Length: 192
Length: 192
DNA sequence: CACTATAGTGAACTATGCTTCCGATTGTCA
DNA sequence: TGACAATCGGAAGCATAGTTCACTATAGTG
Image (cartoon, rainbow over all chains, first blue to last red):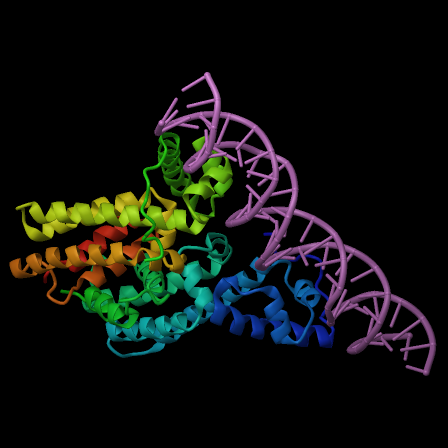
């Protein structure tokens, strides 16, 4: 709503388009490494532009973070759609998807932050993309359910919650090994 | 370590003792309701003391949050020890414990925040208490394992991670129902 | 009851980091 | 190429919230 730009969008000037892309690129890197606490100034510096330029392209810092989270959800959804094309054993396909997504989340502190619970606001603003992801995941689950290889009572939102939970263990708390934990969780999802 | 006060502690003056208790009480309430973002000023106001007084008792805001988290871990550990005394079916005892702890976490936004991944620093400073909790949980698991009612490959840290994960789903993200999720998780822990 | 060490108070200070603003630049188009 | 609108830059402006400190109040003690 707040970002549904209406006024007929004229094409961006060449330099503006270039800068917008650079800013997103740097933001991806900076927030991935330092989490949502990284500063706009850092993003700007890394992109080789002034802060003002960042603000020309993104209303607020939050808007930038939201855009990045949306990107990630879109990526996850795209992967899920791909998975849907595959003809292997449905549970195995799902498992592979989860592992890949976990790996992606593990290398992005901002995503962990958003999924792990803090960053409510940001999550909310990416709801459409998240819903889309849940929808596709639902199809994958349905298929595995039909094959009888996944617990019958698992729903798409459970997968979402488990992945969010997994993200909350990625921060490096001593004794916590998310890979091991993911192995367990995946095995727990299997049909008995 | 950082808080192992050495200089022979003389007993607090009566008003100081009273205020310290009031501050903790208010902090529990305020942080539980508004999370770790609540302000020291709010804690002070609620406690009916000046900010300076809060700082007389707690070096920093973080120190206060750490103390509260420690309290929670001590509570969880105490419950776990109680559970160890009980003679019911070991898995059922563990299940009951998890449900009660989840409920406690659900009513405390600061705990959710700390467990869900943000608040690394705070978590680290409560490590001793957390380790103690993991240790006792280990005993409960061992018992259930002997009874053959829990998955043989579950470890105490897995329970910890699952609970942290659960906390990350409590923030009220649309479509996420932590109670339902807990039911699933608990059932997934059962021996096949 | 007087004295003093301990404790309390809260306005002021400070640090951090997001956001704005306006003069300088630069693409675009006639 | 000239003109101008779009864009950029980054110092300065603000807002927030944690923390300090100089002064006042009071519990404990002889």
